Image (cartoon, rainbow over all chains, first blue to last red; front, side, top):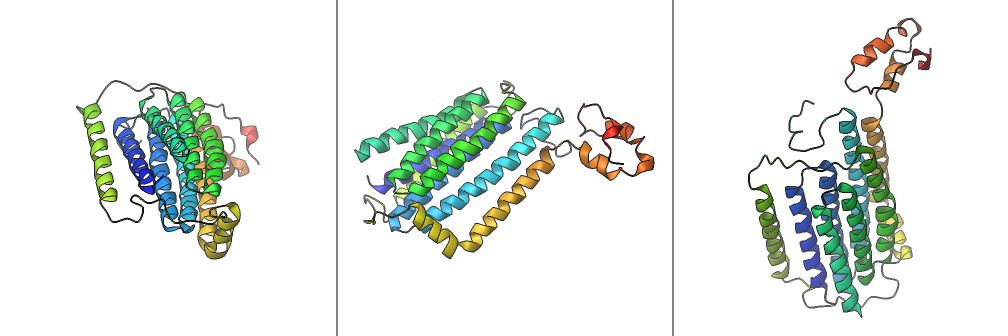
Length: 99
Length: 205
């Protein structure tokens, strides 16, 4: 299996995640689509690491996983805080910085 | 065999991604994302990245998705309103996504990458196993490793600060003995305070 298939699949997954962010309005689903885009980046990193026969790209993918976990934790904390203040969970209605 | 496995995993990953953006209920979206992550772990195994695949399953599909499930169950998976502030958003968004895919595909596949039509160099059997990745993490990339652990700790503290009930630091701040009687009245004006009844006995005076 040649490696350009993996890279094309990664581009397709990234475009799918970007489309979800443009399309959906619930903050939880937007976080899920961010996960899709980060995972597409991970797939590209691992594919490039296989392409050059070097394992450092896999270490980079692990660091991306750590960053994604941090982003999820902070984003879900924000969603819980929004829910506690009884604000609408809709990014179009949350467009003002003052709550 | 490898080709069949690649296409099965690719269809799984793509179906999971489309499920995430198409499901109306966020809970089903989380389940679709779990399927997507398992398919990606199979793809990582095909690319001889065993440790990354294991970390994907354990960390992502195990821990992070449990967090998502908890928050979706707590917040409640309400469906989105049909009110559309941007006219034509649902037609414009797939168009822009398709344009992004075409652009990315053209940019990657028209370049002179080594990968085009090539299986990659032959690697020895230990490529990407936990021993090799652990050696790289603890020898060559020790400082990024420690920095990422620091980042995880900061994110955990930040999430606690963001999502915790605000009455506990309030009580500790005004815990000096003479003002403890007026603390509940002031606390109820705080918009961040929840509706839980405040009892002054909780103040450590």
